Length: 75
Image (tube, helix red, strand yellow):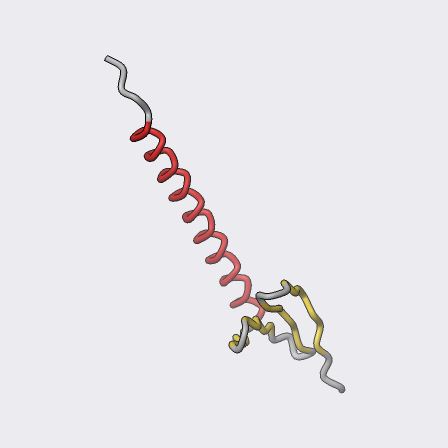
């Protein structure tokens, strides 16, 4: 059986994600390639989503704090 590679996603300037015929998912970022089973890739996706949500929450909290600091105090 010939090994086939399927491109799952590409983002110009960032990298790509492929899956080989044996079912291994490879994340390509610049000169780094990370190979993992599908279950590991799913766990990575969950972890990345959680981190992204945390970054978003922190950015909103920081923006809110800056707005409160800049707002004039009325007595």
